[in-house]
Length: 352
Image (cartoon, rainbow, N blue to C red; front, side, top):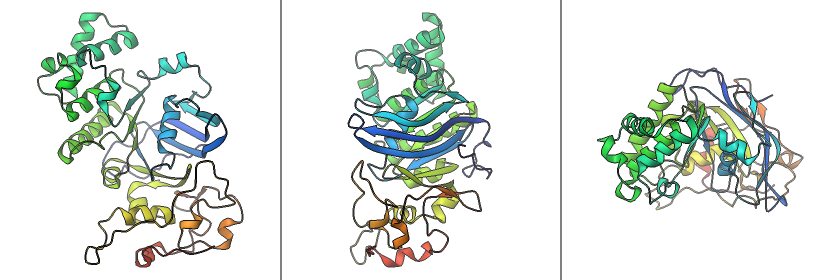
């Protein structure tokens, strides 16, 4: 069965989680036309009103997981196993036309570079109005009025004037607000935000994060937020999923995961997110490199980079098991190692 949402209170102060909006069970994704497995055994849920963060290094599988949820995997990639369901309705195996009916109405998406998802030759108001006409069947006058209302709702000043502008006439922060307005226009169950604030300056980033939190609260929206910025995840999310080499290695309440990690990889991510030792002119790094996509390894995929690795880590596949406090971790030694001492070891590697 899919993992149930945590019963802990929403850490950043959002609404209490409601019914499950998104359920992912045993997801596997292949690339290179099925020759390589890039994502394996990924299971999680996102409830209505809940914000779940997905973190990990580049190449950890975050974007493939999100693209699978959106039915937008690139050519050569495919869901090879598992099930994706929205409010209990299975989406796996849907045709392209069926996915097009789901996207924009039941699932919205916001990506890193909003300008690349907007037509440069059309005003942003017309582009939002077209979504409302196609998805909701509004007539042209009402769609135009509703577009202005939505631009006002996402905090765009003088929304009627903004609606008459083309994408190149708006700033990055304004474009991101436009994309959020399009994403929530049809009151979706789920919003997927993939690095939605990465290219923005810190002030605009804070404004967009505040907007996402407000949209979530006002519309009881389920939010799946992908970010490399752990500070963003800590501010916005109730629960955190940590991905490594195509697998989930830890899942739990944001406050617990980001302060008391159970998996050595999560601890390493938190350590390298700090500024390092400026007196010694050194930055923290995770030694080694992730395995190549599709690599077949005998046990833990993090073992050759882990300071706690032991022979039993390589004895066979490591399951994602539930702990006594309801968290999940993919580590055979999580109950015996002391990650609070990990920072003192620096970048020491341990052979297995």
